[in-house]
Image 1: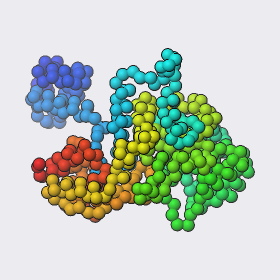
Image 2: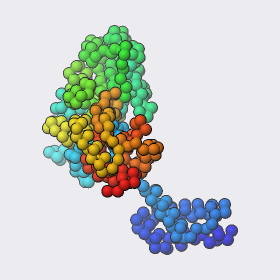
Image 3: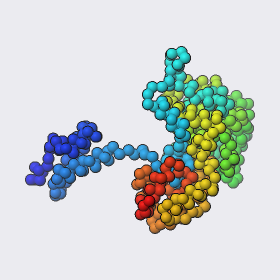
Image 4: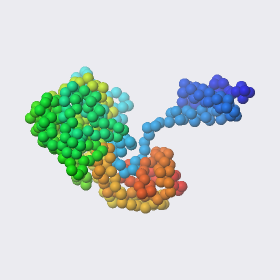
Length: 452
């Protein structure tokens, strides 16, 4: 075909001024790949009868290809959904002190595993351990990369090829098809379920412990709550039975809270301190849920057991990195200083008075020029406090095709995440960070056809 003969070569494209700019910005290897792929696509189009595009058009397509290749998929978003711990949106935002701590150690070298006093190799485990033991009352502590890893490591170290007794009501599946029993099986532990789906009695554990076992495991229900005709032994009862049988009690708390949640109008969530005081030998929990820190799995408890856990080969595979340890330490300091409500974003959100949220929603309405302020509910989310909500106010937009509006909001920079309720788009001020409010209003006006 004559048009194929008119297709420019790669070298011809590279000699253009625009291609030189691509090389300067994107680098030569990536630019070459984009040019070659685009020319190959044009060649196939010509074979099917398409017209040969101009060199300028080819360069424009190359530019679009390059932009698409380097466009990040992990970007900041504005969470106006009203879900405080939104797992899909990264769970807990970090405090300013935690962000600064990350920056301090990320930009250069740091004392991750270096003992400055001795001038020799040190341990990364010390950086958060002292803070964790002081806060929780545990004898020792270890940080790994998430709570699932913590459970896997604990069982691998303490119960490999041995029986682990657990209530059938706690064998839950959480987001993404992740099942607690699957983690237990991977550890090599032999799972022994007791009781029924809705009712478990202490005698069920006593009977199961007639045979040799490694430990009793209590697991957090995560995203659901048992209601109705239900019963489960409390932790103190489990502790007594486990210790009488000469086995350990491990409490997978999941969300891991250090403070009393009832002061914020929520149900009581067992704290880490309460778990240890009730007799749990080892407790594990997440760092990025109700603690309000980075993703981490935190293990606290009896020192002899923690020593066994930290010596297991898997401990190295799931250990926390310097960024996690820096952010976690800064977050824990907020609790030691008792300024978590002022400094930790999720507790700022949870403790925010309803009248302040309403005033903020009214300001949004006045700026965008439409919508009404309605009473609504914010949720905690993230597998923490299932079914619990907080009274809030939201800006409600009555618009045709609300899901289409949500899609347009997600295309803003930064993307805005809202929700649809009763055919209205709802935007909850509780979960919008203060420094994102201006971008939220600009994005709203872009979508709604108004300008500031």
